[in-house]
View 1 (cartoon, rainbow, N blue to C red):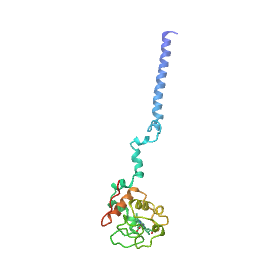
View 2 (cartoon, protein in one colour):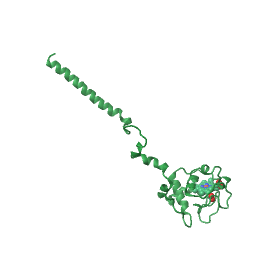
View 3 (cartoon, helix red, strand yellow):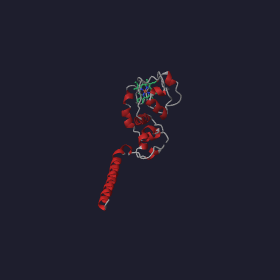
View 4 (spheres, rainbow, N blue to C red):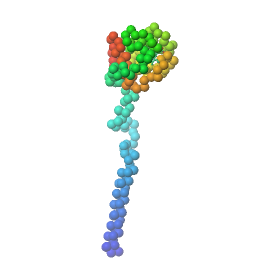
Length: 179
Ligand code: HEC
């Protein structure tokens, strides 16, 4: 084989390699997309470092004092519209379908002159922020058999607003929950 022949073969081989390299890079670029967002393995806690990790879970996990810090009684008044059908909110307000709610924060549960259900009468203690939060979220879960025919407010932020509003309905509003 003369040197011209050799050069042709070498050139073709190199050209082929180059072509394969470019093809490889191209196909990497195309086919690695689906894994692109998450290089490496899923280790426990790994997502904590991601920009979206904590924010994405915070909405459900935020404790009441944190939600309360951002709560707004004015917004709560608007979110409490469904309650108005059954409850009075003003001082000295009468019972409607449900008992009056002025001053309900830290009031003894089922303690007014109202025909409470046995379910609510059986509950011990006061309407703490936690109790109110659970009751407004899912009345039947908090007190199975309660007469309060209300499906519950599932949005934790709206609940915090509503409770902040209830808190404002008092001669001396109760202290905020400690963080
Ligand atoms: C369809 C009518 C209805 C709606 C709507 C309703 N409630 Fe009630 N609520 C009642 C009744 C009836 C009771 C008494 C429950 C029992 O005895 O089991 C009650 C009881 C309560 C109590 C206990 C008060 C006490 O004296 O122990 C709280 C707190 C309360 N409701 C808050 C709310 C809030 C806040 C909302 C709106 C987010 C709301 N309710 C919506 C009917 C309603």
